[in-house]
Image (cartoon, rainbow, N blue to C red; front, side):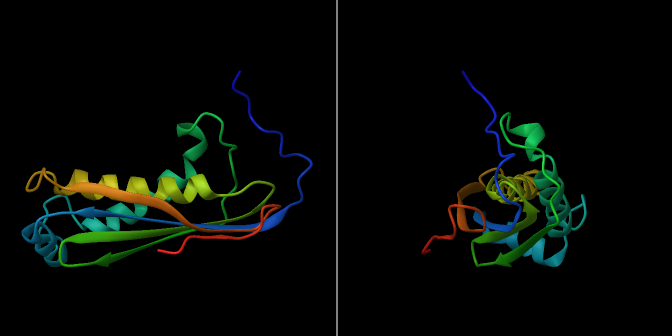
Length: 146
């Protein structure tokens, strides 16, 4: 009985969603990322592009998501001593939100880091992917406190 929600009667508004997550890894792996020491190329640069592409493909991956004309996707990385944190922000001016696109962007970026680094560290762990913030639409603002 699955069905796509009709959003045709909703007003068009500016909408923003922010998602975060991280990938834990060995210190040596993180050092190689910092140094640019991976044969496949710039790990974080490729992960950023993959996350953006993932956001744009969300409706193809998740069956009941509406195809959206995303206006912006920004992805930032923070390197800690034992992990890389990702924050993905998606924006749109439409009738439905971009939470799934932000979550997909963060997840695909993290998976790309895993793919590019797995040759030296198969023990990496992706975790804590979560929606941090959502603005716009009828339900208003959602803000997670870390």
